[in-house]
Length: 488
Ligand code: BG6
Image 1 (cartoon, rainbow, N blue to C red):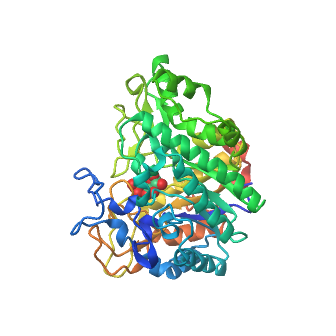
Image 2 (image 1 turned 120 degrees about the vertical axis):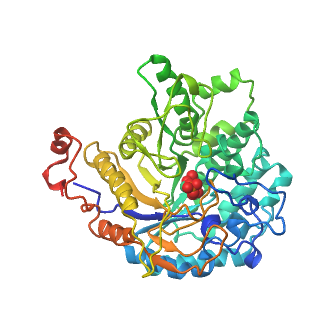
């Protein structure tokens, strides 16, 4: 009982949020490279028309992982990671996106990174596209154009062939459902028009399905997952109208999973598109492509839950607009307003497994908070330990009590990195502190936080020790179902 012996423990990052070196070794600009820095509650990130001189773009330097990857991976190994989720920057491999030949220097960088992971016996989990599309694809209209799916598949094939046997776990798109809430991040789409977003999502589904098939052809041992942003919601009241409003809110997220896990658009989505007069750019043979390209596992990011109901009918607010018009008196919020709900993690794991009967992986979860580096080089972050511990406890219940096959857990930002929503550095997630500020200034030196030692011990015990001696299960029935051995 407890976490399975082969459970994957680690952390997750994204190239544009850590690498820096935005134009080194032939890398082309991506959609992330024209996003300015924002400040929580004060200034939103801005998309500029190309790189403006004098403007600060956090992705250009980030935490300089491009030059420090060996040191960073050694620190992950010190914590006992057996998996590391990272993304490959598409425009390092195809600088403009539409070339026929890849950029060798870009591929060689990830060879070196994989060598380091090998050295430390860490399994790579690669996100093929994480919030960065080559800026060069803007001239095609980015993902609204079906041709971009061909460019993506060429890029994916390049990775699958180059890293065959070295990488066996893949995710096609990070948080694919962000196309509904922040389409610039999801795919270089800058439009409020739902029809445009739905066409772009359609092309991503095709690209993902083709990639899943290709991955299996190239190496039958490849496991390819889908990844979405978990926006799970509770009804504002038992009023059936609030329950229906919540159902609709969840469907706007879950249809992305339905297409990728079941291989077809669900009826509720087709009806909705019809009602809104949105026509998908369907061609002969597409249905077969979607059907043949269902994923091997499902993964998601879990940070918060929402309250929804009658007032949220017809809207979907995402990472950049958390206000649904309701609040939840039972949960606290982080400094960035994200509702902290560990039990919701158990709920969501159950919901997903019940619905798809596929192995599930939590590939992002963590607390963005302000940390203080002490004069002696320590960082005391009990709030982060508390957050993670409470989520891991609920995940363990999902495994033990409910029997959900959870493959692994990669906490978000094992090392401090640039925040995707605000572009800040001061929203820190890491077990490792990086001395760089919101303006990209600092020594870039790495420091172990208290949570570093905590997570190391958690992994060493395979999750049997979470450091909360008093914590048991929520009630006697849970404890009984889980068996005695599990309590601390
Ligand atoms: C997820 C993204 O949405 O949330 C990450 O996949 C992102 O890229 C993470 O960093 C946390 O969001 P933020 O805005 O705090 O960085």
